Amino acid sequence: MAAGDKEVEKPDFVTFTEIANRVNERGLVSRPITRQGVRYIADHDPEWPTPPEQWIKAGSAWVMLWGPIEEFFRERTRRGRGAVPKPSDSTPESPESEQ
Image (cartoon, rainbow, N blue to C red; front, side, top):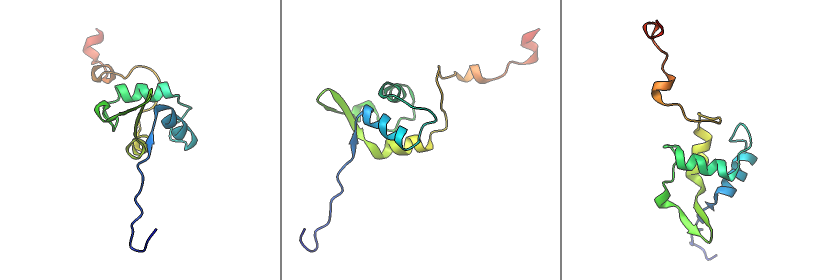
């Protein structure tokens, strides 16, 4: 590299399989997650940082930038399996409704 040249950082693109591997290796999930689990989160969590229109098709896989996804998993507080509760499901019933 010649003097004065700046080193350009290459984008770090990942597949769903690589996302699962990285979040498992880095302890960003409470229990192991598969690529299917990551894909489910990407399809259903409104906080997923990379909308489908920004995914890039590479062969038979989808790729996206790792940085926003790593931040998403580091900051994610909701974890676990099962259906996401609806707002009305999480509010306690009033005593009158039980009579």
